Image (cartoon, rainbow over all chains, first blue to last red; front, top):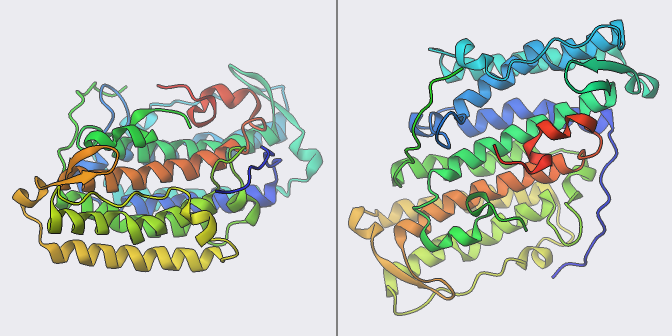
Length: 186
Length: 186
């Protein structure tokens, strides 16, 4: 058994956030490139997303969300709200495209986003600058960047969950031990 | 918007399961190698696991769970139950060890496990063979192998969830959009 620890979350740190942001395209690439198409197109039923859809969503975020919103704050503060983000844009943008091409594009765009981030040379004061989200109201640069990190992880969770979901019945009685399938916390 | 699809889960297929099993060490390696120690040691509070702990757990699974249990079924069927799996063994086994060393070990052990799997040359009839789990009772080879795949994904979910958890407050009002933090289904 291990000693119990207290829950002390990490404070946001640009220096710590950046290496996680940098890794996401490579993680997704290793996970999905060359995987049988049945996995890539699998979903959780209904209009839920497949791993293929998630890659398109990451790409759309690079194009229209993270750096464009950061630039908006730095240029206009709260005076001009962010453009709304289209969570479904990837279904049109990715249609008929090859996964390998999408993975390459995500890697290229993320590298460009991080170069832009570095170019802004954000200091602690800049992290406190405020912008306006069209639905959520005032938000800070720090919140935007923390959300970028958490959003990456959110969709890595989704890829794993969609894949595991395929075997929700095939695992038989082990189902109760697998949080990803049982949905149990703990 | 995308057209709604029906939920048709994939049936277990050794040919489809193998490429997912093969990828897990590389995914974890890309995710964690070189990451700041603050991330590697972060957890969800209390006695929850860190990404570092998860790697040790994967290693222990290779050593004592998947292939040893498969071999047990093929040799003894239901006559001899599996040895119980120690979910906490990694806390002692990984103590004081370097993450890079653990990542290398996991990759080496998984490759050996897959070579052993290939060596068994399982056909459809072999997938239906039955063994005995010490708590769950009778299980099949197919269930064991499907669980191996789902278990990999379960702990990839955990790595992402632990990392995102660190910024549960830092994301501010975006919290409600992030399933990994809000815990909302959907």
